[in-house]
Image 1 (tube, one colour):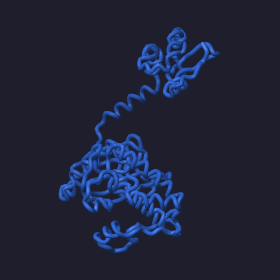
Image 2 (cartoon, one colour):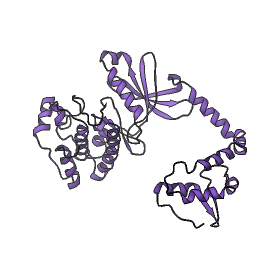
Image 3 (cartoon, one colour):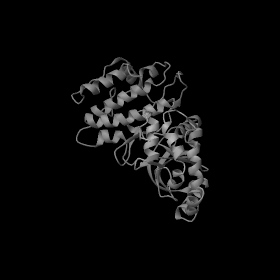
Image 4 (cartoon, one colour):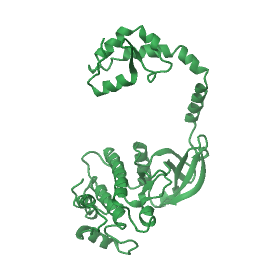
Length: 349
């Protein structure tokens, strides 16, 4: 029968990946579907393959069940026997054994301290079995208990377990010792945005194109968190980390909180958005306000409501946020200025 292209996009992808035609006559699964190729078996089922092709757009979820059974039966015989005597089977057993091992401090080699926080420190670490490098966030139990930080630490771990984005640091392992709770995270070797804003180059801040690049990746991270019902509440340059290729990820989810759809919360932590200052209920809007402040600081080279190293009381910062208009220098183009103004006015929520 003539070769036709299905109109359903998903069916088209399946066809391109798994169905090939030889000389316009015979039809077989390609090598992407299985190895070794069960072409000889499927040639005996030409009618079945033709039936599948005719019904690619039918939406039938059971369409490929019979084909899958044929391939599975074929693979369970000679191909599996060959696999059993190959190096890949031995490697597979090694990884399955490794997968079953409990994660403890003995799983890792610890290296130098990368930074310190309210509950402990972050060290570089290496998985002994694989050599892969991570960052180990060691939270001291005594300090957590003294500051009544148990809910915060538990929430951070639960949120890290839930998310999976290349724009947010990922949780690879978690374990505890007698004195510490340890979160093993994506290692970011490039420093944080605060360092790059104020210490790289003759002038503070970035050009608009560089700021746009970082802003886009932070935006992708915030979008992922919001889709998971997570309010970040701590978007600032020191929490945006760079990897060794110059890409950024959101880090430090200690102040983040999960909310249900349509839910709002109160609470003053991290961000200085107007609705937070006024103790109003909010959902994701503080993150957008903080995002606008981040964009402003990346371009201007200083925060919008407080000069660098300026000693000012929190009440004065609150007043400036609510009453003063931020000033835009010639570093801003119209698009950057418009974005900052929109998040300032709550037009982006």
